[in-house]
Amino acid sequence: GSGQATTILDTAKSLLRHLCGDERKYEVSGAFRPGEVRNAIANIDKAIQQLSWAPKVELEQGLSHLANWAKESLQDAF
Image (cartoon, rainbow, N blue to C red; front, side, top):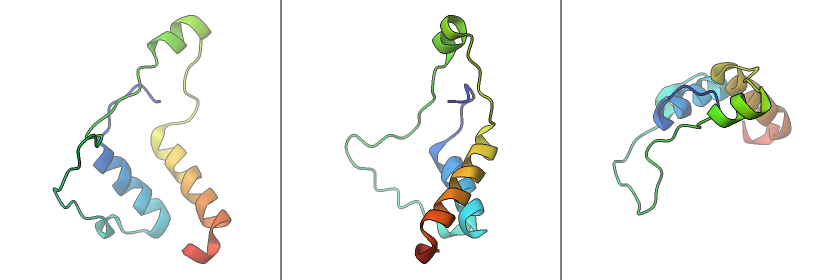
């Protein structure tokens, strides 16, 4: 967690930009299923206080690393 709120939609769009260069490939149907997560934020306060931990990678950079790993690992899919 980064400790900063971001929407799942913004995260998905960012990941699509890193994977294929086009965030418009994502469509929101508006059909939510029971139990589906609509927003989330990681509370990292205890990790900071008890472990003296802090994120080393910004969310955008982490998504870039994830996309690069996925493209290398799943070359046939992209």
